[in-house]
Image (cartoon, rainbow, N blue to C red; front, side, top):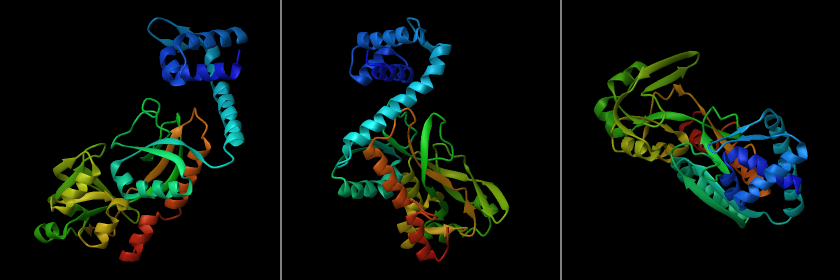
Length: 309
Protein backbone atom coordinates (compact mmCIF):
# COMPACT_ATOMS: atom_id res chain seq x y z
CA UNK A 1 0.00 0.00 0.00
CA UNK A 2 1.17 3.51 -0.81
CA UNK A 3 0.60 4.93 2.66
CA UNK A 4 1.15 8.54 1.67
CA UNK A 5 -1.49 8.27 -1.05
CA UNK A 6 -3.84 6.59 1.40
CA UNK A 7 -3.34 9.48 3.83
CA UNK A 8 -4.03 11.97 1.02
CA UNK A 9 -7.21 10.06 0.12
CA UNK A 10 -8.36 10.10 3.75
CA UNK A 11 -7.79 13.87 4.06
CA UNK A 12 -9.67 14.41 0.79
CA UNK A 13 -12.61 12.29 1.99
CA UNK A 14 -12.89 14.35 5.17
CA UNK A 15 -12.67 17.66 3.30
CA UNK A 16 -15.05 16.66 0.50
CA UNK A 17 -17.55 14.88 2.72
CA UNK A 18 -17.88 11.70 0.66
CA UNK A 19 -15.87 8.95 -1.01
CA UNK A 20 -17.29 9.80 -4.43
CA UNK A 21 -16.36 13.48 -4.19
CA UNK A 22 -12.87 12.59 -2.97
CA UNK A 23 -12.42 10.14 -5.82
CA UNK A 24 -13.51 12.74 -8.38
CA UNK A 25 -11.07 15.29 -6.92
CA UNK A 26 -8.21 12.77 -7.09
CA UNK A 27 -9.28 11.28 -10.46
CA UNK A 28 -9.71 7.78 -9.05
CA UNK A 29 -12.81 5.57 -8.80
CA UNK A 30 -14.99 5.38 -5.72
CA UNK A 31 -13.99 1.73 -5.35
CA UNK A 32 -10.31 2.68 -5.32
CA UNK A 33 -11.01 5.44 -2.82
CA UNK A 34 -12.74 2.94 -0.53
CA UNK A 35 -9.87 0.49 -0.94
CA UNK A 36 -7.29 3.10 0.13
CA UNK A 37 -9.36 3.96 3.19
CA UNK A 38 -9.76 0.30 4.17
CA UNK A 39 -6.03 -0.35 3.74
CA UNK A 40 -5.19 2.67 5.89
CA UNK A 41 -7.56 1.52 8.64
CA UNK A 42 -6.14 -2.00 8.41
CA UNK A 43 -2.57 -0.69 8.71
CA UNK A 44 -3.47 1.40 11.78
CA UNK A 45 -5.75 -1.23 13.29
CA UNK A 46 -8.51 1.30 14.02
CA UNK A 47 -11.62 2.66 12.32
CA UNK A 48 -11.06 6.23 11.08
CA UNK A 49 -14.55 6.95 9.77
CA UNK A 50 -18.03 5.85 10.76
CA UNK A 51 -19.83 5.26 7.47
CA UNK A 52 -23.57 5.03 6.84
CA UNK A 53 -25.55 5.27 3.61
CA UNK A 54 -26.17 8.97 4.28
CA UNK A 55 -23.13 10.43 6.00
CA UNK A 56 -19.56 10.08 7.16
CA UNK A 57 -18.30 10.96 10.63
CA UNK A 58 -14.80 10.92 12.06
CA UNK A 59 -14.12 8.42 14.81
CA UNK A 60 -12.05 9.47 17.82
CA UNK A 61 -9.02 7.83 16.21
CA UNK A 62 -9.79 9.61 12.95
CA UNK A 63 -9.91 12.98 14.71
CA UNK A 64 -6.50 12.35 16.22
CA UNK A 65 -4.96 11.08 12.98
CA UNK A 66 -6.32 13.82 10.71
CA UNK A 67 -3.96 16.61 11.81
CA UNK A 68 -0.88 14.38 11.48
CA UNK A 69 -1.98 13.15 8.06
CA UNK A 70 -2.46 16.73 6.85
CA UNK A 71 1.03 17.66 8.01
CA UNK A 72 2.63 14.62 6.39
CA UNK A 73 0.87 15.22 3.06
CA UNK A 74 1.87 18.89 3.14
CA UNK A 75 5.49 18.02 3.92
CA UNK A 76 5.60 15.54 1.04
CA UNK A 77 4.18 18.14 -1.34
CA UNK A 78 6.74 20.67 -0.14
CA UNK A 79 9.64 18.28 -0.76
CA UNK A 80 8.24 17.41 -4.19
CA UNK A 81 7.82 21.08 -5.08
CA UNK A 82 11.38 21.92 -4.10
CA UNK A 83 12.73 18.93 -6.02
CA UNK A 84 10.76 19.47 -9.23
CA UNK A 85 10.24 23.23 -9.42
CA UNK A 86 13.73 24.62 -9.00
CA UNK A 87 13.78 25.75 -12.60
CA UNK A 88 11.26 27.99 -14.29
CA UNK A 89 8.08 28.58 -12.28
CA UNK A 90 5.07 27.08 -14.02
CA UNK A 91 1.54 25.90 -13.35
CA UNK A 92 -2.07 27.07 -13.30
CA UNK A 93 -3.73 29.15 -10.58
CA UNK A 94 -7.42 29.84 -10.07
CA UNK A 95 -7.84 33.13 -8.20
CA UNK A 96 -10.94 34.88 -6.90
CA UNK A 97 -11.44 38.50 -5.92
CA UNK A 98 -14.14 41.14 -5.85
CA UNK A 99 -14.72 42.65 -9.31
CA UNK A 100 -13.75 46.13 -8.09
CA UNK A 101 -10.39 45.08 -6.67
CA UNK A 102 -9.65 42.97 -9.73
CA UNK A 103 -10.47 45.85 -12.06
CA UNK A 104 -8.55 48.47 -10.11
CA UNK A 105 -5.50 46.57 -8.86
CA UNK A 106 -5.31 42.78 -9.17
CA UNK A 107 -5.49 42.26 -12.94
CA UNK A 108 -2.57 44.59 -13.67
CA UNK A 109 -0.58 42.95 -10.88
CA UNK A 110 -1.25 39.47 -12.28
CA UNK A 111 -0.20 40.57 -15.77
CA UNK A 112 3.05 42.00 -14.37
CA UNK A 113 3.63 38.74 -12.47
CA UNK A 114 3.20 36.78 -15.70
CA UNK A 115 5.81 39.01 -17.34
CA UNK A 116 8.23 37.56 -14.79
CA UNK A 117 6.86 34.00 -14.94
CA UNK A 118 5.55 33.41 -18.43
CA UNK A 119 4.56 29.77 -17.82
CA UNK A 120 2.10 30.52 -15.00
CA UNK A 121 -1.50 30.42 -16.25
CA UNK A 122 -4.06 32.48 -14.31
CA UNK A 123 -7.82 31.93 -14.19
CA UNK A 124 -9.51 34.95 -12.57
CA UNK A 125 -12.92 34.30 -11.01
CA UNK A 126 -14.57 37.61 -10.14
CA UNK A 127 -17.56 37.54 -7.77
CA UNK A 128 -18.73 40.04 -5.15
CA UNK A 129 -19.31 37.35 -2.53
CA UNK A 130 -17.33 34.89 -0.43
CA UNK A 131 -16.76 31.66 -2.34
CA UNK A 132 -16.08 28.17 -1.05
CA UNK A 133 -12.44 27.48 -1.93
CA UNK A 134 -12.92 23.72 -2.04
CA UNK A 135 -16.19 23.62 -3.96
CA UNK A 136 -15.08 26.25 -6.49
CA UNK A 137 -11.54 24.82 -6.81
CA UNK A 138 -9.91 28.11 -5.82
CA UNK A 139 -6.16 28.23 -5.20
CA UNK A 140 -6.10 31.79 -3.89
CA UNK A 141 -8.77 34.23 -2.72
CA UNK A 142 -8.08 37.94 -2.26
CA UNK A 143 -10.51 38.96 0.45
CA UNK A 144 -11.29 42.26 2.13
CA UNK A 145 -12.05 41.20 5.67
CA UNK A 146 -10.82 41.56 9.22
CA UNK A 147 -12.10 38.06 10.02
CA UNK A 148 -10.99 34.88 8.27
CA UNK A 149 -12.28 31.35 8.88
CA UNK A 150 -9.96 29.43 11.22
CA UNK A 151 -9.88 26.56 8.71
CA UNK A 152 -8.07 28.81 6.21
CA UNK A 153 -4.63 30.38 6.09
CA UNK A 154 -4.36 34.11 5.40
CA UNK A 155 -1.55 36.57 4.75
CA UNK A 156 -2.25 40.28 4.93
CA UNK A 157 -1.26 42.04 1.73
CA UNK A 158 -2.35 45.60 2.50
CA UNK A 159 -4.90 47.71 4.34
CA UNK A 160 -8.01 48.94 2.56
CA UNK A 161 -9.10 52.43 3.55
CA UNK A 162 -12.46 53.84 2.50
CA UNK A 163 -13.69 57.39 2.13
CA UNK A 164 -17.00 59.17 1.91
CA UNK A 165 -17.32 60.95 -1.40
CA UNK A 166 -19.84 62.49 -3.76
CA UNK A 167 -19.98 64.26 -7.10
CA UNK A 168 -19.46 68.04 -7.19
CA UNK A 169 -22.94 68.39 -8.72
CA UNK A 170 -24.60 66.59 -5.81
CA UNK A 171 -22.69 68.61 -3.19
CA UNK A 172 -23.52 71.86 -4.97
CA UNK A 173 -27.19 70.88 -4.92
CA UNK A 174 -27.46 69.34 -1.44
CA UNK A 175 -24.71 71.12 0.47
CA UNK A 176 -21.42 69.91 1.97
CA UNK A 177 -21.66 68.09 5.33
CA UNK A 178 -19.62 69.79 8.06
CA UNK A 179 -20.02 67.17 10.80
CA UNK A 180 -21.07 63.48 10.88
CA UNK A 181 -24.60 64.27 12.02
CA UNK A 182 -25.15 66.25 8.81
CA UNK A 183 -25.05 62.96 6.87
CA UNK A 184 -28.50 62.04 8.16
CA UNK A 185 -30.00 64.76 5.95
CA UNK A 186 -28.25 63.51 2.80
CA UNK A 187 -29.06 60.90 0.16
CA UNK A 188 -26.66 57.93 0.30
CA UNK A 189 -25.58 55.20 -2.10
CA UNK A 190 -25.01 51.94 -0.20
CA UNK A 191 -23.43 48.58 -0.98
CA UNK A 192 -26.18 46.10 -0.12
CA UNK A 193 -24.04 43.01 0.49
CA UNK A 194 -22.89 42.79 4.09
CA UNK A 195 -22.93 46.49 4.95
CA UNK A 196 -25.31 48.14 7.40
CA UNK A 197 -26.96 51.42 6.31
CA UNK A 198 -24.83 53.51 8.67
CA UNK A 199 -21.42 55.13 8.84
CA UNK A 200 -19.01 54.96 11.77
CA UNK A 201 -16.48 57.78 11.67
CA UNK A 202 -13.50 58.48 13.91
CA UNK A 203 -11.81 61.76 14.71
CA UNK A 204 -8.98 61.31 17.18
CA UNK A 205 -10.40 59.26 20.07
CA UNK A 206 -14.00 60.17 19.29
CA UNK A 207 -16.21 57.78 17.31
CA UNK A 208 -19.59 58.70 15.85
CA UNK A 209 -22.11 56.40 14.15
CA UNK A 210 -24.81 57.96 12.00
CA UNK A 211 -27.64 56.44 9.97
CA UNK A 212 -27.43 56.56 6.20
CA UNK A 213 -30.53 57.73 4.32
CA UNK A 214 -30.37 55.07 1.63
CA UNK A 215 -31.80 56.13 -1.72
CA UNK A 216 -29.87 53.74 -3.96
CA UNK A 217 -28.48 50.29 -3.15
CA UNK A 218 -26.36 47.94 -5.25
CA UNK A 219 -24.64 44.62 -4.67
CA UNK A 220 -21.55 45.57 -6.68
CA UNK A 221 -19.03 48.29 -5.86
CA UNK A 222 -18.78 49.52 -9.45
CA UNK A 223 -22.49 50.40 -9.37
CA UNK A 224 -22.08 52.25 -6.08
CA UNK A 225 -19.29 54.26 -7.67
CA UNK A 226 -21.34 54.87 -10.81
CA UNK A 227 -24.24 56.09 -8.69
CA UNK A 228 -21.99 58.52 -6.83
CA UNK A 229 -20.53 59.81 -10.10
CA UNK A 230 -24.04 60.31 -11.48
CA UNK A 231 -24.98 62.48 -8.50
CA UNK A 232 -27.17 60.00 -6.61
CA UNK A 233 -25.68 60.93 -3.25
CA UNK A 234 -22.83 60.25 -0.85
CA UNK A 235 -21.08 56.88 -1.05
CA UNK A 236 -18.49 55.03 0.99
CA UNK A 237 -15.91 53.66 -1.44
CA UNK A 238 -12.45 52.08 -1.12
CA UNK A 239 -9.54 54.33 -2.03
CA UNK A 240 -8.07 51.65 -4.30
CA UNK A 241 -11.14 52.10 -6.51
CA UNK A 242 -11.63 55.88 -6.54
CA UNK A 243 -8.06 57.22 -6.53
CA UNK A 244 -8.37 58.49 -10.12
CA UNK A 245 -11.79 60.06 -9.53
CA UNK A 246 -10.49 61.90 -6.47
CA UNK A 247 -7.47 63.04 -8.45
CA UNK A 248 -9.49 64.42 -11.37
CA UNK A 249 -12.15 65.77 -8.96
CA UNK A 250 -15.07 63.93 -10.52
CA UNK A 251 -15.62 62.82 -6.93
CA UNK A 252 -14.92 64.96 -3.87
CA UNK A 253 -14.13 63.86 -0.34
CA UNK A 254 -16.84 64.33 2.27
CA UNK A 255 -15.75 64.89 5.88
CA UNK A 256 -12.10 64.32 4.91
CA UNK A 257 -10.80 64.76 8.47
CA UNK A 258 -12.80 61.75 9.69
CA UNK A 259 -11.60 58.16 9.25
CA UNK A 260 -13.67 55.08 8.46
CA UNK A 261 -12.77 51.63 9.79
CA UNK A 262 -9.92 50.09 7.77
CA UNK A 263 -10.22 46.55 6.40
CA UNK A 264 -7.40 44.08 5.75
CA UNK A 265 -6.77 42.89 2.20
CA UNK A 266 -5.77 39.26 2.64
CA UNK A 267 -4.43 36.45 0.50
CA UNK A 268 -6.40 33.39 1.60
CA UNK A 269 -5.78 29.76 0.72
CA UNK A 270 -6.70 26.32 2.02
CA UNK A 271 -4.85 25.23 5.11
CA UNK A 272 -5.00 21.58 4.00
CA UNK A 273 -2.82 22.28 0.97
CA UNK A 274 0.77 23.29 1.09
CA UNK A 275 1.54 26.18 -1.21
CA UNK A 276 3.03 25.09 -4.56
CA UNK A 277 5.93 27.20 -5.73
CA UNK A 278 4.00 29.28 -8.28
CA UNK A 279 1.33 30.15 -5.70
CA UNK A 280 3.96 31.09 -3.12
CA UNK A 281 5.74 33.27 -5.67
CA UNK A 282 2.50 35.08 -6.57
CA UNK A 283 1.59 35.79 -2.93
CA UNK A 284 5.09 37.15 -2.27
CA UNK A 285 4.79 39.31 -5.40
CA UNK A 286 1.39 40.70 -4.36
CA UNK A 287 2.59 41.39 -0.81
CA UNK A 288 5.55 43.36 -2.13
CA UNK A 289 3.45 45.24 -4.70
CA UNK A 290 0.54 46.17 -2.44
CA UNK A 291 2.15 46.11 0.98
CA UNK A 292 4.19 48.42 3.17
CA UNK A 293 3.01 50.90 5.83
CA UNK A 294 0.78 52.54 3.19
CA UNK A 295 -0.71 50.78 0.16
CA UNK A 296 0.55 51.88 -3.25
CA UNK A 297 -2.76 53.48 -4.30
CA UNK A 298 -2.88 55.48 -1.04
CA UNK A 299 0.70 56.67 -1.52
CA UNK A 300 -0.37 58.10 -4.86
CA UNK A 301 -3.44 59.72 -3.31
CA UNK A 302 -1.36 61.28 -0.51
CA UNK A 303 0.76 63.09 -3.09
CA UNK A 304 -2.38 64.61 -4.58
CA UNK A 305 -4.26 65.50 -1.38
CA UNK A 306 -1.28 66.21 0.84
CA UNK A 307 -2.85 63.95 3.50
CA UNK A 308 -1.34 60.74 4.86
CA UNK A 309 -3.54 57.69 5.30
